[in-house]
Figure 1 (spheres, rainbow, N blue to C red):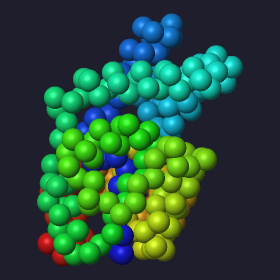
Figure 2 (figure 1 turned 135 degrees about the vertical axis):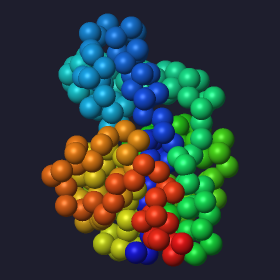
Figure 3 (figure 1 turned 90 degrees about the vertical axis):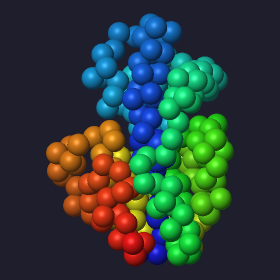
Figure 4 (figure 1 turned 60 degrees about the vertical axis):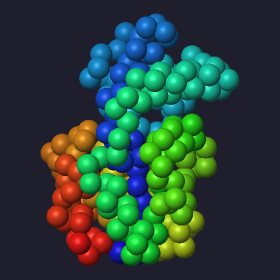
Length: 218
C-alpha cells in the first residue's frame, strides 16, 4: 500500500464514549429529547448537523441554531476528554515509523476543525499528516466516499492503494464505497458488528497489533 488514511475519533484517540456522553446530555438535558444511550450511540457518525436531523427531524433547528449547538457540544466534549487525551496505544510509534518510511498519511474525518486542532495540536502530531479532510471540506459525509476520496486525491495516491484505519461500521462502509481496504480498531465496536463487510483486513484493539506493525515493515 502507498498511503494510510486515518479516521480521527475512536481510531486515533479513544474518545467516542465522551462524544456519545456529550451528545446524550445535550440532546436530553438541553434540547428536551428523551433518548436512551442505545438510541444515541448508533448515531455517532457524520456531521453534527446530520446527527441533529436524525434525532429531531429536518425542521426542528435552523442552520444557525445547528452551528451553535454543534460548537456547544464540542466544547463540552473537549472539557471532559482533555484530562484523558492520548493517542491509542502504539499509534505514536506507528506514525513515526510510517513517516520515516516516507509513506504519506492523511486524516479523513467528520470532525469539525476545532476538534481536529484539539487533538493534533495538544498531542503535537500535525506534522505527520500531508492532508486533512474535515467535515467542512466535503459536501457529503460518511458513508459517502467523498471524505476518503478527497484525502487520496490530496495525497496523490490511487484509492485502491490506500488503507483506511476506522473504528465504526459506517467508516468501514465509507472505505468500501471508496474502493479502499480498512483496518478496524475495536475501541468502539466489536467484529461481529462488521460481518457484512468484505473490505476489512484486520480487527485490532490498538496499533501494537503485529499485522499493523508489518504494514510498515516492522
